[in-house]
Length: 155
Image 1 (cartoon, rainbow, N blue to C red):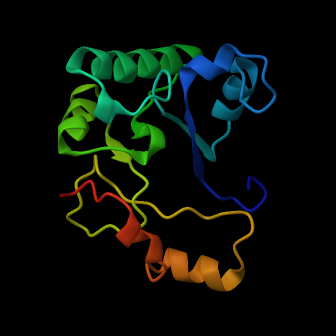
Image 2: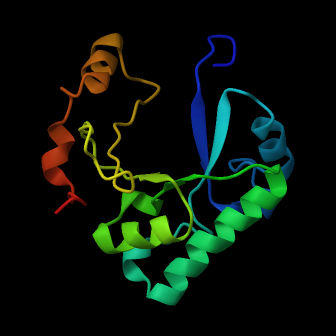
Image 3: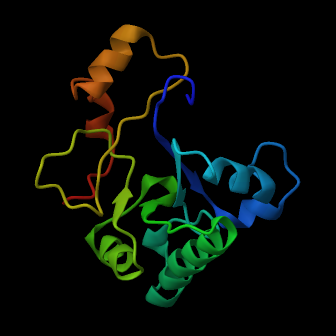
């Protein structure tokens, strides 16, 4: 993506940084990625637990711990958050804002209007096996069949 000058964000669950599991990014890789002008680092929480199931104290711990750890590691501000399992609601979004993030993304596959709540931003997954037709439908907001099967965080 660097060669094509495509900007992207990677969302990190901090508990996985210290594992030796080759399926997860480690601290050294994270620091190296953070040096790229095309990569931004976002938080995906401390433990990848759905925030909907937690009390206020644990929500704050998930949000604040992961943000601070990532910022300490990469020496840059971490201003975006991706909800674990894509699960969120207006109550959780309020805590994300209070934790100091500028915006957050969920997994509701729909386009965002100009007046969208920056803490409840929708996104459509682009998957490696998408063909060009599916890709075009997704980026134009016309590929939303999964939307009716998922919880809408805006309600």
